[in-house]
Image (cartoon, rainbow, N blue to C red):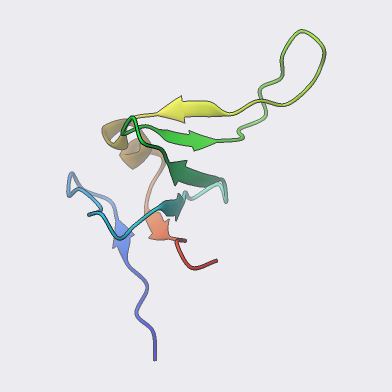
Amino acid sequence: MTVTKTWSMDAEPGPDVTRVRDRFGILWRHDVLDLWLGHIGHTDENGQPYEDYRQWHELLRRGPLTDASNE
């Protein structure tokens, strides 16, 4: 049985967590600059989707967050 980690408070996810999913189902991946990148529907001037970024404390407002590292 696998236990899924969730976050809804200020706790940092730790180095083993590379991706999380928010309550909207959006997948966020951790990058080397300590930002979390995800496709939330934003597009550029050509209509192409691009990744938006958030810091961990901003992602917590989109929680609860679920560990999606092994998806």
